[in-house]
Structure formats: C-alpha cells, structure tokens
Image (cartoon, rainbow, N blue to C red):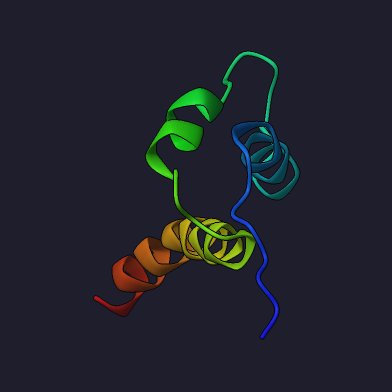
Length: 67
C-alpha cells in the first residue's frame, strides 16, 4: 500500500485557482474560504468538488428549459 499525504493549504489553493479560475478581475472567488472548508480533502476530492460546482449553472439552465 502506498500512502499519499493530503494536500497542504497552498496546494489546495493552487488547485482551486487552476480548476475554478475567476471569470473577471472584479469578481474573485473566495479561494481562502474554499481552502479552509476543504481541509482533509484529497486532490481527487477537490477535483470532484470543482466539477460538480462547474455543472451547477448548466443544471439550473436545463431545469428552466424543461418547463
């Protein structure tokens, strides 16, 4: 078995910045809050959180278009 340590705060922030870039300079994402709330998450956990977050607007749009 190979043990892979969990990410440090700096690494989690870098992942969020890469996977969830801000759309404009005026509207910055709360990266520090995301880092605080994901303590104990692995890299794959963070990637999944970002994927689910990115899909939310599309799901909302699809729900509106279905009605």
